[in-house]
Each structure stands twice: as C-alpha cells, then as structure tokens.
Length: 332
Figure 1 (tube, rainbow, N blue to C red):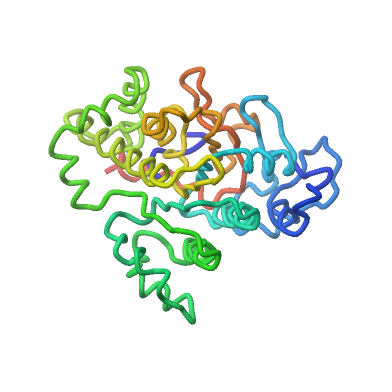
Figure 2: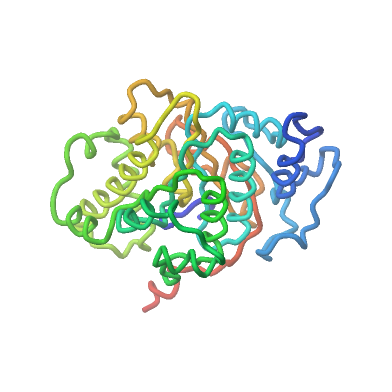
C-alpha cells in the first residue's frame, strides 16, 4: 500500500527574510526535485532511514491542491497563516520526527503557538501535564520519569525532544488521546450522536474498508462497528484537545499518525464540528510519508477516495522498512 497505513521537491530559492535563523533548519530536511535548481542540497547520508534514499521523491514537498512541488518558504507562509497545524508521521521513522521538530521550532520561534497536543499522551497524562510548569528538569531522563513515559508504546528518543522544546518555550502541552479505560467504554457502547454522525455515509464506508485492510482482512466483520467507534472517539479527542484553547491569533499544533491528520477521514472533520466559525482552509494537514518503489507520482500516495484531498502537503522521506506486516499473519 502506498501512503499512510491506518495504524498507525523542493528547496527554497530564497528564505523568508524575517525568519532567516529558523527557516534554514526547516529547509535542511528538503531537497530539490531533479529538474529544479539546487542551492543547498541535502546529502542522503543525513537521512536516518536507509531504504530508497535515491528515490526521485525523497526530500520533496508536495502541495496536493495545486499538484506541484513547493519551496520551503511557501510552506512556511502557509504554516503561519493557519489556525491549526496537524503534523503527521509514521511512528517508527526517525526522519519524520526530525521534520516535525524543525517545523515545531520554526513555529515556536514565531511566538504564535498556543498549544501543542500529542497523540502519544492520553488523558491519563493530564495530572502530570497540569504540574509540568512547576518543575525544573536537569535531564531528559528526569522529564521522562516525571511523565511516567512508557517506551514500549512510544519511543522516547522520538518524542522526548519535541516535548522538551515545547516545555522550554513555556507553551501548554496537551494530551490528545483517550485512555485504555475510555477505549474499553467506547468499544462496548454507542458513541454520542454528536461524534458518531460527524462524517457522512461515504466516509464511514471508507473507514470500514480501511479498518479491514489495516487488519490484513482478518478482522471479523462483527468487530468493525466497535473499531470504527474507537477511531472516531480518538479523532474526536484529538480535535477537542486542539479546540479547547483556540484563538484567531494563535496556532494550535497536533503531533499524530498520518491517518489521524487526514482531511477526509480524520481529526479535521471533528475539529470543524466543534468550531462552527472554523473553515477547512484554517486547518493545515501535513503528511510525512515514506516513498515506495511502486510509484514516483505524488498523487498515488494520497489514497484519495473522494474529491476531498486527504492532506494539504506531503513531505517524502526514505523508508525505515519494507516488511510486509500482513504476510506472516496470512501464512499462519
């Protein structure tokens, strides 16, 4: 499958004058397409993921609405014009977190960030987050211990630096996920209509299809409704976290898996339902996707099923693995 699973070209011709300190850091993750002038090419040795580093799309930044590769400066301007910025990722790819951190630092330097929400923190983190500002930490290890972070679920090496940057900027950190107890409740009973009915029938049908595919077509059909409810509840919780302290002059960020930041099936739909004054153009969705040897056409990676583009921007990176996760299960 090309593009984001359920479960989880270009370099600027010139940098924006007012942000010359931070923007080059952001630009360091992007390369120019083969047919564009290269000012400061990034060596593929800088990528930590090692598969398909010579793929034509690696380092490219694609704008889905105009069907073109865009310079970093244009993307930076779009970030600053948004009220909500949703930064996607493949959870186990270190390059995706590097790109997220550079974008985060760029926005923090603009002094426009209101809150930063993390899919990796559920409501069980709220007590620690409420007390976070009252503590000083001498090391990343102390911060990890205070948060009672579980490396088995989310690699601290990837998320610790993001959290530390937000904390250093004195910006509110918010949990964005539901807890295991809440998940069990959602699994067992219907959602409130205000959540269950956010998306139309076509989107719900597609959600069922993708849940089936993400479980290697092995999930009993009887489990589909509960799995859909859990997905909806998680996306609603992420949207609620973003909308809790919304303001026209502030930018609220979400760090989450690529599937959650989809305009057609994910968090933006619930965010729009929670904020009647919000327009879809106020929400910028970036997917950071691994390239596939199957295609060098950016449109193939969108996996769009309707006229609504899943992502506003796509940033392409090498892949961390080419393992077929379903092969072993199907063969058993």
